[in-house]
Image 1 (tube, helix red, strand yellow):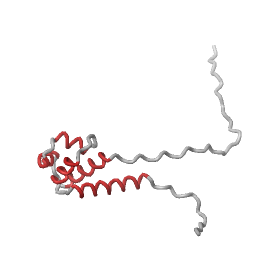
Image 2 (image 1 turned 30 degrees about the horizontal axis):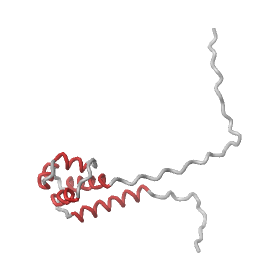
Image 3 (image 1 turned 180 degrees about the vertical axis):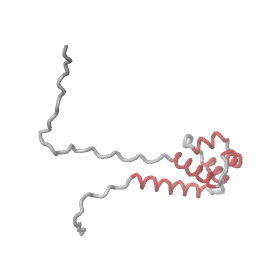
Length: 125
């Protein structure tokens, strides 16, 4: 008995060295507002070395709800955001400013344009 191995197909390119054109990379998704708000709230709380329970009690928000906000699972109303911000010693404007800065930082790092491989001289009129 002999083992019969089928012939494997072999592809030989007609024009070696030509690369297939690659599809452009998809645009990075912008982060969700609720994720950014949650990240900022958690970062501020942890910077103050405060517990979730402490902040929730001072803001008069249930602990599970504040936890969900911090994890980006819930969209909080402006009243709840203001209460959480005030419990952390921030105004609502301060919170929104921090979130806006985080949004700009994340969007800018996600949209960096790769430098061109062209190393020649470029003149602009």
